[in-house]
Amino acid sequence: MEPRLRTVDKTVPLYKLNHFPKKFAYALGRALIYLHATRSKNVRLEGNDWEEILARCIGAKWKASNSGWDDVTYQGMAWGMKSVKNRKPFAAKTVRLISGRNSLSFPFNVSDIKNHDPCLLGEQILSIWNTRVAGVRKKFSILRTVVLLKSDDLTEVSVFETDTVLYSAKDYHWQWNENDNLEGLSKTTNKHVFTWQPHGAQFTIIETIPDKRLKLRIRKPPMLKQNQVLEALKVDDSWIEIVE
Image (cartoon, rainbow, N blue to C red):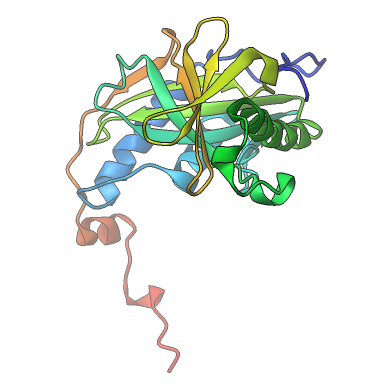
C-alpha cells in the first residue's frame, strides 16, 4: 500500500494551490453570464462545460480523459473537475465528492462483502484509488482536483482546489453504518472521510472546504432570443446551403 504523499517535484506550478490567476474570477464570471444568456432557464454547469471553462480561464489545455483526473493539463500539471450543487456555496464547510466506482469483485475476487473484515475491505478500496492516482501521477507530477460549488440558480458559486493524493490505509478505521454502507474514519480525528456503497461500488471522499476559496456572485442577464443572436452574427440566407 502506497502512503499518502505530498507532491515533491521540480515542476513549477502555473499558480499556487487555491491562488487562482488574477483574471480567473472575471473570466469565470463572464462565462457564467454567457451561459445564462444563451441557454435555457434551467441553465447547468457540469461535465465538459466546466472542464472547458476552467481550461480557458487559466490558459491550459482541455481534452476529455478516461480517468477523469487529467481533463485539463498544463505542462507537468493536471486537474480533475468536480461540480456540486450547494444552497450556500459561500458558507459550506464540507463537500462529498463522488470519486469513481471501486468494485472489489474483479481485482480482489470479493463477493460476500459482509463476511469480510471492514478494515480489510477499506484497505482494498483505497488501494484501487491509489493505483489509479499513481498511474496519472506518472505523467503529471502536480495533480489537483478543482471543485465548483454552485447555487441552484447558478448565480452564486465558489471554487477551491485540493491536491489529489494517495491515502495510507493505516490512517483510517472502517465500519458499517445504518444504511449498510462502509465508512472510513480518520484514526486521528475520528472524522468521517470516505463512504463506499456496496451496491454500485460508489466511492465518495468528504473534503473539508478551505476558508480561502473563490466566491462569485453574478447578475443574471436576460436570455437572448434567437433573432437577437442571428442579427448580431449578421446571418442571412447565404449562410444556408440547400444540398437536396
